Image (cartoon, rainbow, N blue to C red; front, side):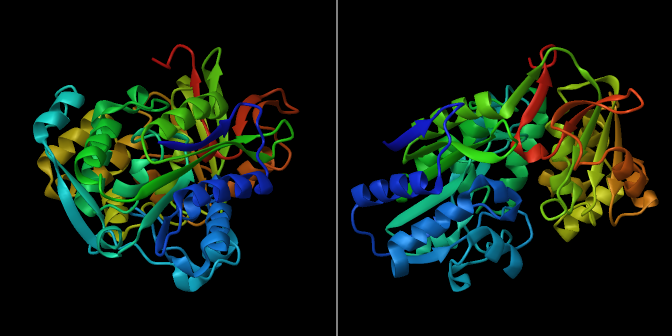
Length: 423
């Protein structure tokens, strides 16, 4: 059921509004003795999940016994990141999700079902896996906290993705990522009902019915002045709260353009984006907006690696961001990719399919490293002087020499497409 639903394109919920909504819902849920919170990690800093987790601690106090950031395959949060995102919430409550070892299998989504929803593109069973804390922790309330926003793997992020991928295991994460990539990003991004979502919904209905999960979902937008604000808050224990949040996110976070863009410049905040694993949001969130023969310039001062996971980093360096047919062929022929399907999916996500040019301007990776994975390279200092993020506005900008660019200050906050490419 839905416990709370409030949002619109013009709503702006303050901290006091969020506190009042949360506490009203918590009171309705009744006394709870042992609560687990599952917020996103620092890569979703702008979700306001950190503040919501802090408010949850303020309400439950010692009854909030565990906080498990939904890392998926991301690196664990540093002490500095925990402090910045979660304010004064006690660090002692935070648990690290070890996606290779701390996993309990719940059951398999049948291969026949995966084959059906993927239109025959994928035919393997999908394992529903979660962190053992969700099963063995003895919690009488599990709060899954996060932001609904367009997503390259599942269409719209969050809800049960936070559970089955964010706290999932290696095989489940790999296979879900590959399912989405094989089906095609253009057919997935911005959609609430996709093959990957259907598979996770099957897992929720068949394997997680007894878990006391309540979803707390935000939709984040920008004010006319460019400041982030909470446009919507949806709380519930079923799929309807996600559908409401996804519908609002499509209005708030999706930019439809009249015609394709010739040049796009994306800035990656160095605190948030240190790898192409995350930084390639600049590619897949804009790919449907960029014209054939166009150019994407990625300003990445914090970029120091390709994959946050060492094995994935090695695979990216080995194969590079090839076209989809090339990645699929390599996956068939090479066991290292076949056994790490999330890496194979990521290679697809980071490709322009040779349709437009991608120029990375990294802070800590060399020209040879960038070009070895089939990106073009440009000097960060030179490009930052020409395309200064502090002087550019989100959207269209005309430079002094007459060049027109489309600037995006944070690709994690939206999805951009031209009318002719949004199928």
